[in-house]
Image (tube, rainbow, N blue to C red; front, side, top):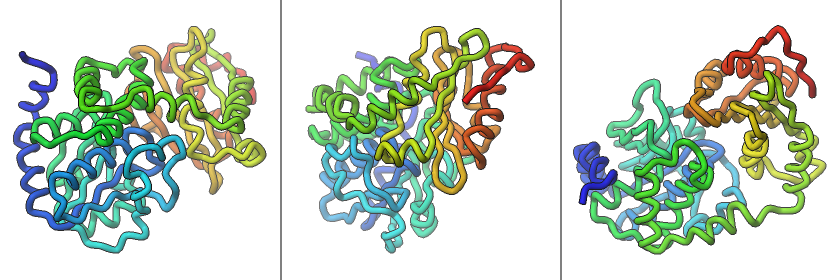
Length: 346
């Protein structure tokens, strides 16, 4: 029977073979996802790393965090998460460095230095890249999640997938497809997800840990963000925000805020939205979402960010107000609205 997985195996047959050869030849392997890791970056790193360890127990496989920070609380249930080490504390020169879910070297933050010290670099990713930084890249921009590509690689390479590996990879797929609600939830994503469940992945556990175990403090912040939602352009554009003072007073950490953009996105009639979160250093992190065919990645690129058509992000040097006045008019233009009629409110 021909499946989407069969097609992808043919698509990357040469790359998969070269990666297998590089893994076999390496004594030390370091794996890292992007800065401020999400479920796909962490799930892909843990799933691939544990699979390599199981196949090659004689090798030293180090799992890295791009930042000198903790694993986000909602992902600490994943097997092996306690082994993730901040890249700044790793002094080795690995034979092989594998980047997952990262289109450019800069997005690796501290792990970029480890990549530069490595003899060989491999990349698995589903974001558009300005240029390839890896010796071997497995990149499919239309793919729902990097974890899909990791799953395809393990299947094509006949690597055993145990329940822990399967759950890590399924977490990447579930989170990057918004629980299979986003436009990127394609047949390949469902195909790999089905296979992972057959290998012992626990969808109910993922749902419980990631989506149904929020702290009361976070829910109070969510209600605040919800109360601040404004719409413009006849309700087709929505925006909201959270300040550093909000996070501090409500005792919410930065890594707990990833899902707040979906609160803004959920407003009926909204086509595109932005959620702004103030961070240290006089900067604001902007998360953009699109519900339909409109591409928000171009707006992220204007501010030096990037991402996908339906989900992108950027960092803006300035205040919440500065960022709002810079980004919201671009979203209004994107939906064909009249910028001259804008009356932005905080």
